[in-house]
Length: 335
Image 1 (spheres, one colour):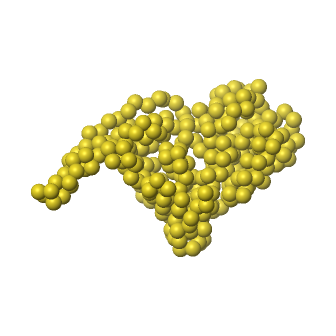
Image 2 (cartoon, rainbow, N blue to C red):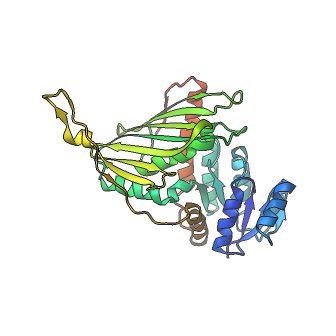
Image 3 (tube, rainbow, N blue to C red):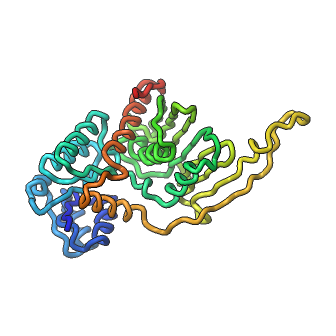
């Protein structure tokens, strides 16, 4: 049996504890959390768990096979590195680290020691996102023109990272997963209204080698909670809305392109396109992600969201951050 240490029991940690316990009630060997208040809270929510407050105890514990890191991003690299050096498999919540070089370091360590390194890009385990990938790969959309996403809410505001690092990893990972390619250019503009030096509203733009363009808008400061991504193709379009009650995926016929240009009326013929709502599997994406990590540790197989997957996202965000600091300058992503 795989024995886990969950490191960090703040906002997201309990969700990982719950799902790993669901896989096996004995799987979570210890929860490492500095805050006594949080330890007490988790102990009431999950009776019978063992706790510690010092990460070094986890590293020295020979009964711990794998470490699940759910702490602030600034600590991801150092904590993951220490775990790998001590022979532990590692799961890191997004982002994998804060720089491309840090990611490369973790990937090298995991490969040298034959250990599993996985990043928590949970949307790649989402049934709706996977269905959209299936539709895109089938060619049903025709030529893909562009994508755009919105991920906005009123809060939760962070002090250690801006809204882009906090929220946009989801959208970047989804787009890379769907398109199967990396962008050649990235630019970003951000605005600070709530805290000096911490952008709470960010607009990102990605340009792909195939000519596809993508826009990502993230914000902590919006009255509307939106979790939506649209893919526009020459034949059909996909709208993925995680909050929709009547179907998270909708495929809409692109009637504008299908009908073409009307020479007599000197305009494109526009009419409402047919809408199809595909059926989706019913499961919790986080549970599938946790199961996948355990299976990879046991079998040695490469995770879907492995270290390289995490590095691709971090590299884009790192260069987008450079663009932010340079007033939105377009940054070329080296191949």
